[in-house]
Length: 81
Image 1 (cartoon, rainbow, N blue to C red):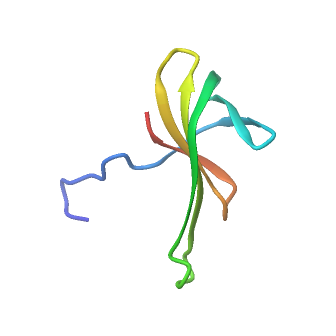
Image 2 (image 1 turned 180 degrees about the vertical axis):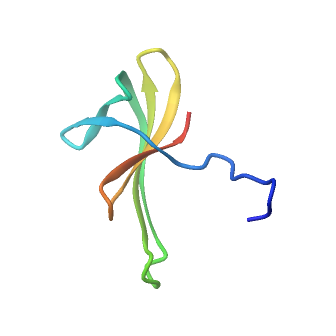
């Protein structure tokens, strides 16, 4: 990456509480609704695959956020707040 530039919407680690495979809280904030969910399975042809399960969420505060679970590491990340 070029010095002085930064990635937009770079994923950041986040704590997510899950019930039955669906996020119910993000960093302690309750999830009011799941707006959408999708799976990305890319780069399957190279050793560093990309497998993510994304959720677009509405928090109890009314704010929207997108989080994903990296299938390979089982870790959660916030894609954008």
